[in-house]
Length: 390
Image 1 (spheres, one colour):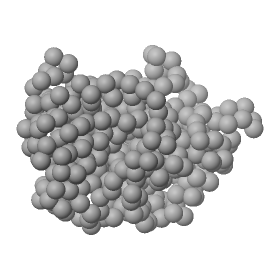
Image 2 (cartoon, helix red, strand yellow):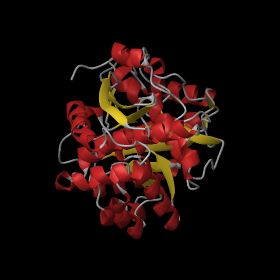
Image 3 (cartoon, one colour):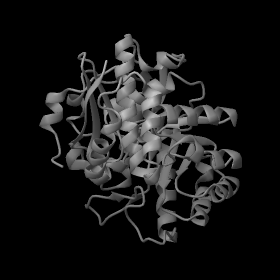
């Protein structure tokens, strides 16, 4: 078996394009993956094209060898977007290999370790605050509107959700939200107004959710360490499942963990297990975020196995299309230390069209797929229909 072509496709997403990789072989098996960060879609597609010289003409079943060929061949442009493009190729190679053997990917790694995986409703109220029209949803114009979404998650059977800080607008106007450092001043202050806003929101969410539902707050890279500590201390009485933080160095994150008074989840932006090691050694987080789509299956699994050595559970980062969910569920089925995984029930209406099978979710649990490969294929006609021109 030989690889005949490697292709990257960008498809319309919610806030940014979704990236997919397609690997074709001379015996008719096609491997698919979802990968990378669509905010740099042109760069991602170009990198996949550049990296394809290591793959075309090779046997796709040599996944580890081909990954190391890409890794060693790009050491002068180490990390970052290069690694995310490598992830797209590596993930598609695993799909080819598993399909050739007629088994799910997790079977190649000793799984399954479970038949279902607990997931949380992610970006609850966040997406509706910023993209209601794309979602076909009602915009959020009050805290009561946001609390109705908490009730919706409960009614759907979820026992955990994650949100971001919502920013009130003038009466009758749609609210907005703080996400991933894309709003607010660059010096990242936690103002008294913003602190009070966050406390009111989480207090209302806790009253709506009741004591049995877990609540996560994602504050990403929006505040410096001192602000994260103040925020955690102010929210501690509302029993957060975790406060999610990124891009602090290991010692600063450990300082936050020691003083914030709430569990800390971090790590989604780390690529490759070596970049997790300082955080593990510092015991800097309570829960480790691991992104399969950004770093690839083997690096993500290695990071998860390392976390187990340090007595920590992981929570896969998974916020894009359905193929991303299938890839993350294969990771969960191949390891023993998963606390919970991310899930986005509210997404663009065409997401279901992009795949041949959608995830089976009931009462906040995703069924581990049993079909070969990732457990779903991409519908290439739908990819073309919703493609973004690069």
